[in-house]
Length: 411
Image (cartoon, rainbow, N blue to C red):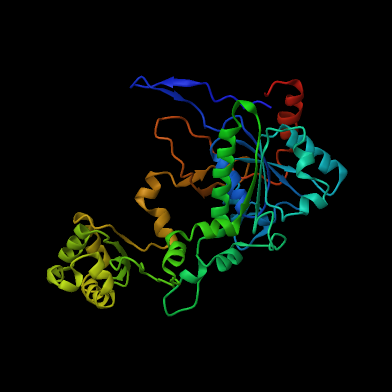
């Protein structure tokens, strides 16, 4: 197998730069055997970057298509959130015909991503080594709850399970309240992102030798990694980090305050200059000369005394009055937005992080979240295609991947 060529169409800019036209992963074939969230999120990233992602679904479809409560054109909003820019092919892997077709597709794929529980593919007679024997350049990525080995490898896992096991859930919530899961599905999404990082690194290493790699991505591993400094605090200092609520356990001026109108304002005054600006804006300049708060270490040591003083100052004015003054003083600050406010934010809209997919063939328009990977050199992004209906592209995939490969025209 040879590595697909990079896009060669270029455009001369006013600065006489030569810019590749088209998304960077154009020409790559991704066989997507994933369901639900972690895997589809990974393959959507690859699809957004230009890869031809074929989503292989059982006859009943990806189970996420049926997740309530919101549905558009028969598919759930959950499914629609992570499956744009893909093509759908239905295969029943429990039948000889389905497993044979999968082998054919794997034989011409650049990347295969699956999130079956370890052992499931073997029980279907689809052994990894058999599937890749004739395609040594394929990059095979397995995403699972706990990895392909270890005492938990056969346990089913979902986002909330790994949030609980990882210790991350113990850090979330108010200090005097119970542990709370993150409102964002960090277990699934982090596994999807790490999968993409691994796949792209293996793609880079494959190079002219054409040798692929097998990746083993564990949701629990990813969540442990994301403990970051909290995990290292325990390893190096022996402490057990606790729930921080609206604050930061190392920087007492890195927290939310409630303004007069009940709106929460997040402030991250984590330098001495920002501390001075915060005191001046709040009208409490006397705190600058208070020996309890002269530097970061002193403020941390006296955080229980400092907090109420700042809270008292904040309730004097509504949030809309505080924010311009804090920004002018170069103190980072923001309202704690609800989701509708965040998606209407002018910066979010300017960056095209809400995208409109127009009506197509009688299917209603969609509003989806955008691709955060931006190329600032003027190259053309991929045109957005709506998440596919179940089995919508079966004939096209067979023609493009198999018939054309047999003619030798695609590689």
